[in-house]
Image (cartoon, rainbow, N blue to C red):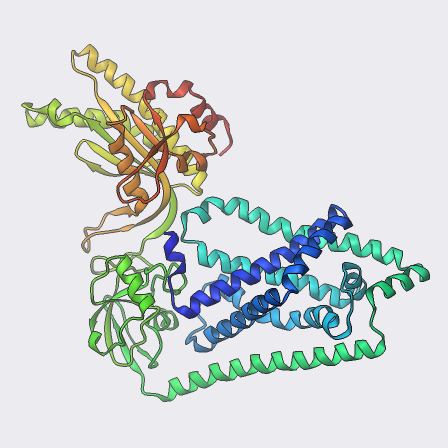
Length: 565
């Protein structure tokens, strides 16, 4: 899924790239403040390196261009929006983003502007003296937190569909909280120290000379520049609001079109509004896991009437549709802007209620999936009566399913002599640990079952198990009224292929390293094997278990059962 994070229009990709540049710039600034807690010398070292980059001609051009592009494209996105119905996280991100330019003006003018206009040496002491114990200080602290939260929300909305982001989220949340806290603590600590030193008139005189502290005329120049920049920012924001209102007025005057939703209402919509925006503004349930950015394709619709009157898909939309093998009459609701009446069928439906097949929305989650298959079943039952075959299978499942249920798993489906189970828990860690406990329970149950078969004079049963953890989509799939709840995704395919690999590897189970990592189980690299699985580009490391009956005594299981979930 890594390639999918760059899907979208050129403007979207530029906005993402510029946002990344600004996020790196902000992270370096925050890190610079945080290292004050180590020593002033550490701060100076990081500050010198940071300024050497950002105040160079290239650095200034890159950061300036990124800031301009991000502001212009973000405002453009707001201007062209046809509805303000959006998730809370997006609302927060938009509002914080609008606040940033207003709060950023004084920071730019009195620091970078003072350096360029007046030759001020904008050392940390100059900054702390300038804003310590003032309302501007609180404003700059708010700016730091607002910009950081805005960037973190943007990163999450961009990367939330990737596997590695979900795995790293516990660590990333910790970093996201700790870094700004350390930065503010560093600022307060150093500002108090500087305030104490400058309480001595002689110390103040020496510091002002070192900083080239502006005189009254210098501060008047900076104040005038700040007022002018503030006026420009408010004018730009006002123009954006005026453009948005003008679009709404024009849309209201223009003759509306009608969008007919299969298994849903028929609603009026302004011309040029995307189908997804119409759904959101009209309260029609419509899935869009990526927030309408054209990356996840879960908003796609089948155009049943009016396809020929629609504008052709953009290169980005066509690429996204091709990636999921969509039919020719499929379009992304977040990208297509009908100008005539259309009849559309939502492939996924958020509320799960439908009168036709395919309309149930899947819920995305990071879960462990287990595939199990009985080895040599065909040869074992060759020549037996149907009753005996069914009896054996039912006895087998009666033994191995209870350990799955006891561990918190659910059998999603039976497939002849095998099954697929999913461990639907609150967290990926809990799901992975539940799957490993189920493997242990299956091993014990199989050993007891084989002992009874031996006492009856029957051959033991051999099995193969594959376990993998990753993103899956859970939902009802099938014809109307006959759609059982199931799960789909690459995670399911990988777990199935791991199970298939157990036979040539002479293993009873293969557990992917993703499952082990999620469960918090450390396994030596020497114990893992590398597998090249069909449909997966990169090799997958997995732990082979040759005898599940001994799993309970292994270090692997002891870590699972003793560590807190």
